[in-house]
Length: 333
Image (tube, rainbow, N blue to C red; front, side):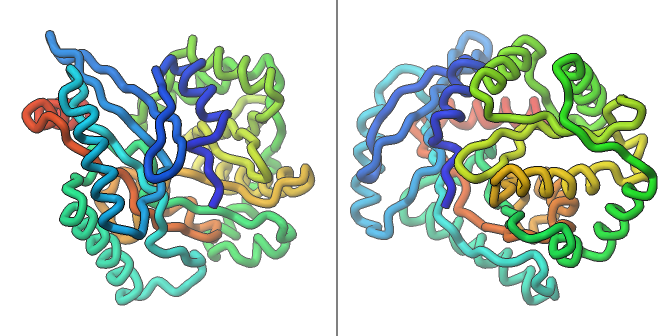
């Protein structure tokens, strides 16, 4: 399985752009880079360590011993409250075109609940209260032709793409003088959709970095050169990966975003890519999950959905952990 989270490009973005501290350490036989997250809550400077895309070994006793060693090592280090472990292990993968009858979705939900219960019981870990790595992912095989991809879409998505084509929505790669416009439009949408965006100074640094490394494009759907939907995509290995996107809901009637995704698939194929990774999905049949609205849109394009273990916390200081969780939940209501 593809590993963005331990890739050099993600390490550079996290440390050079977002100014995260990091260190390198071995866990379960492998070397990983870990991030250090710091947050001030009143007089307290709370820290959490985070390791993403780590494989939980099948040998349960070995895994327990390694986690015990990890806890012992950091237990007495000041202000380190917990360690977040984001596991890549798969629960199941399936094609989105599979029938979604009641038994299917209920089985999917129960499988995940069983995995959660088992991990918490076996390793004394707690399901993470902040989801820094998605519990599910979706990948599209873009070696297929436009006709094949169109055929696989659900009927609603197919009609929306056709409608956008008829409306003469334009598709293109943004020029440098449009980068600020993308940021401004995304900021406007974030105010209505209540999602966070990075500060403009970090955005400018990100654009410089990915431009210097020739590993990106900013794709847009536009009318008269005004961006109505856009996606910053980075290239790594043979994949194109969604990093940031927005869509102006004022243009819902012309289905700009379905069209944008469809055109990106074709562009990526022509430029030697074989997969598009959409990132960030809600687990199947968890309707209260905050990413559920995003998942419904992405599932309309079909693709292969991969259900993973997700993120768990190794708690070092229980009282401060509860405080940190309370603060996070209060700030994200």
